[in-house]
Length: 192
Image 1 (cartoon, one colour):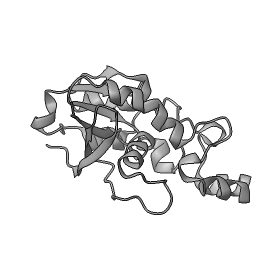
Image 2 (cartoon, rainbow, N blue to C red):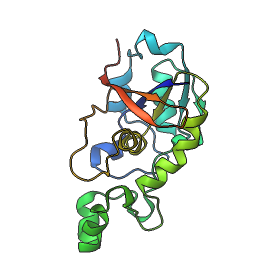
Image 3 (cartoon, rainbow, N blue to C red):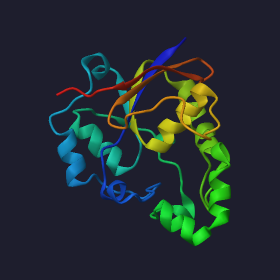
Image 4 (tube, helix red, strand yellow):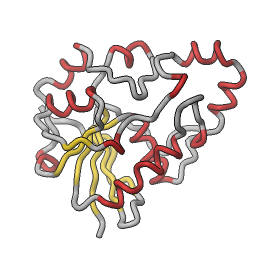
């Protein structure tokens, strides 16, 4: 049985604005993030679904502002950025030099010291995707959505993404029984 899953990235945080890798840091939405979501909702076609959210506060705040009551799902937590967490890309390039660039060039297998790779994020998500009982929605993180997109397109996370995603919009996937996603629709806007 094929199910449909819509994914939405959480609203903006101060760390997003500063270009810092958030990972597992439990950072709430910024005033700008809250303001951008106030008065918005998911399209009517998706409101009656079971909704899920990462255990991190920024996803739960996003869901609440959109009028959703999600079930917390640990598999939806952001990628663990380990020692890279809280730092910007320029800071990491300066601190780690060529070793950081070489790690970036690993695509799906990029693994921060003490963290996890996008491939490990995919492996964490697959059991949850296989177990979805019905059409659903989830408020999650950029790293999780990119991992699902990579699965859908067999994209090794090198070069440009196969589809340019608007991180303020819903991304809809079809999920097969074995947990394989296929992109159905990208960049579905929230409604006012």
